[in-house]
Amino acid sequence: MADYSSQTFLNEKINLPHTNFKVGVVTALWNTAITGVLKSGAVNTLLDAGIPEKNITIWDVPGSYELIYGANKLATDGYDAVICLGVVIQGETRHFDFICDAVANGIANVTIKHNIPVAFGLLTTDNQEQAVERSGGKHGHKGEEAAWTVLKLLERG
Ligand code: DLZ
Image 1 (cartoon, rainbow, N blue to C red):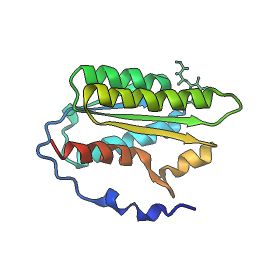
Image 2: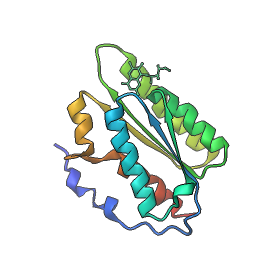
Image 3: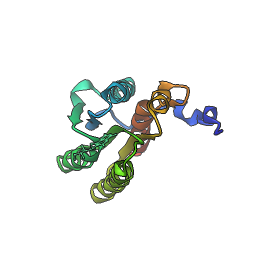
């Protein structure tokens, strides 16, 4: 079993050069009970770091596959960073693999093409319980961690 408690770097204070960054939070509506929690955690983490509410754009997209379009659109529109949040739960079909692979590759392409931080806050779990454990449960809060990730990269300006 991995030692999740060793991720103490997540408590490090972020020292942004300024707080005028424009950040997009793109969230999938599938499994919205979980993605809503991820979104709240991400937004609160941005606010706690001093990013003003007016600089945070929240965009709910239909499913995780559409996170790619959302991230690319906001990056094209000049956002400084994008946080992508979704939950894909393993089912009987191969949809799981297609969506997870597409989102991982799509987001990587956006970050490279636009040269901005794009966080991969996609939970890919075997069941609902594992998703709950990663959205403020015993395995942390992947929404907060995704926000922390882009803030850490924005530290450099
Ligand atoms: C179709 C689909 C399936 C089967 N499962 C999920 C899921 O677990 N999580 C999620 O975010 N989205 C799912 N989707 C929807 C796709 O992401 C996408 O919205 C549709 O295929 C339409 O492009």
